[in-house]
Amino acid sequence: MTNQRADLDWREGGVPVSRQFDDPYFSLDDGVAETRHVFLAGNDLPTRFRGGFHVAELGFGTGLNFLVTLAAWRTSGVPGRLQFTSFEAFPMRVSEMVEALSAHDGLPVEVFAIEDDVIPARLSGPDYDLHVVYGDARDTLAIWNGMADAWFLDGFSPAKNPELWGDPLLAEVGAHTVTGGTCATYTAAGFVRRGLEAAGFDIMRTPGFGRKRHMTRGVKR
Image (cartoon, rainbow, N blue to C red; front, side, top):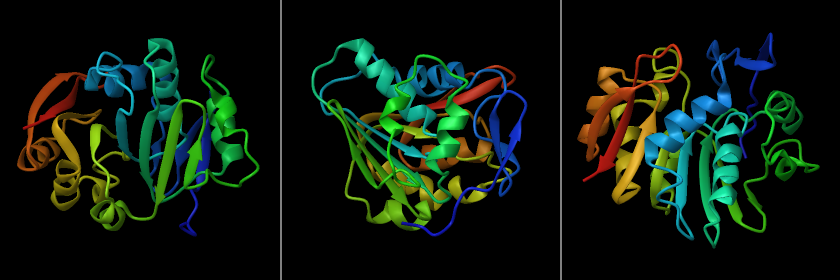
């Protein structure tokens, strides 16, 4: 467990903003709609869901992506368990996460009804296994023994958080993706697309969410 914590400001509407990176945790327009557009649709989900499907993510943040994915999993009616692994260096306190998520209806926020100050490294329920890997992803992903079917690349803006978008880390993303697996991110920065291509993905630039004209999708060769 990292000793570092997220340092937050709050904008009108209950959107948390990282002081470390001067960037909001999710869209100021509609965080749930952004997750559905970028990360679910961007990875062809829930169409690809099957028992044991494994989502991996860079940047756990408020846990919004996990909860939106779990809600979609439950709606899909797919039998089995959702596997979800997220890499996070600056965890939010659970109370802060719940506050940030309170503006969104219909999410299974009850899974975060725990006594811990931060989400434990492993949290399981009747249909999911959540694993949060704390620490710098540049160190922790390299020693992770998992393989993802889909990646949510959701670090802060590449201009403000370049550590999560460098070629060595994207190469590890590729190395930890099954053949035919996918990735998606809200950014269309050229160096990110090139890094993912070098990591073994066929890359597509597609329409983004809200104010973002484009986003990036990839399929592992």
